Image 1 (tube, protein in one colour):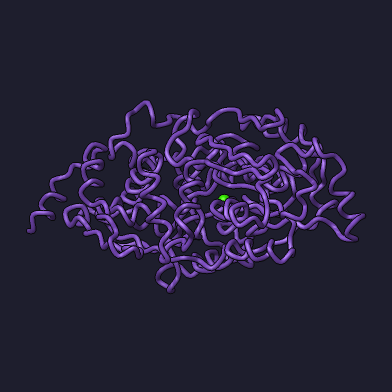
Image 2 (cartoon, helix red, strand yellow; image 1 turned 90 degrees about the vertical axis):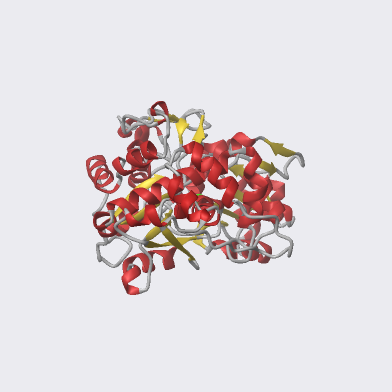
Length: 445
Ligand code: CA
């Protein structure tokens, strides 16, 4: 046994030891100036206790995936004996197709998802009727998304509250002879929900007054440059890049729309979790430690440097560092907002732990699906939404993982609800009574 292996084997898996470990396994300064890919040694003693040695996960190059990348780069998964193979997905449709294949078929076992994709893949609603049951195990990130508007609609001065610029979308259509075009990266999921929420709260009917379209994340920059869309909704660093490259401006951050909102999640194929419950817990342990690491201000620069490499995001590290710090530049008044509370949150906010898969939050995506009648035959009632949510969201493995990495009991939620949620315009989502929320929304189907 080498000295280091012995050292790894001695670690007990507490938070204190993870801090020691991250210091030991941390990447040395990169002298070459190119991206370093460090092969972090798997802890053999931890691996011997698991029911799987490896897992294949998909990710997209947006900040939601940061805990997965950091978990690999900083050895948080390896420490718990699990080799995580991360593969970049060309778009959300590719991720869906790869999870249907599973790693046995050359695809993936799960990874990063916009909700309600895992629920709908489980029900066959996105997969031509083929049901691939999945489980949602943790939230990857809160906030860190935005709605960018093109420079040529700067006259619209679009902000979080569109009621301040009444009639803009109608005027645009009259002037241009076509509707305002707004894009997202996958239809009927998370990012479409943000843009619809923003429009509808401002009294703009997203199905009548704008044209909505799907554009893969890496193409959003070029699309806006070419004028093929006036706005798009996606994860950082893309909205921030638009601003930096002077192609557009940030109209709203999702944190302004709904503070501490649920964003993307870790979800796996249910058959993988059922066959490998120990490895699933190991994965969650590494994830939780990566999320804790990411939230520490002193780690943001290193995180940006690691994520910026060609292998991962292939984006200038300065852009990532600004995004990670919540330093958004809203072009409308030219002044950067320097408010970390608007930036991405991985582990904790003043509402408590982010990572925990609260059923009250995963339910919201199904209630919002009901609002727009996105999945007829799958989610037609609140009762159906609740039943599907209960089938797909699992909280027990997260709790076990948190306990095993030494998360204090006060930080481990005991219930399934985070309570009532309040949006920027005062709208309240009460998970105990989603009908009241739906009734309060003026624009819906
Ligand atoms: Ca997102």
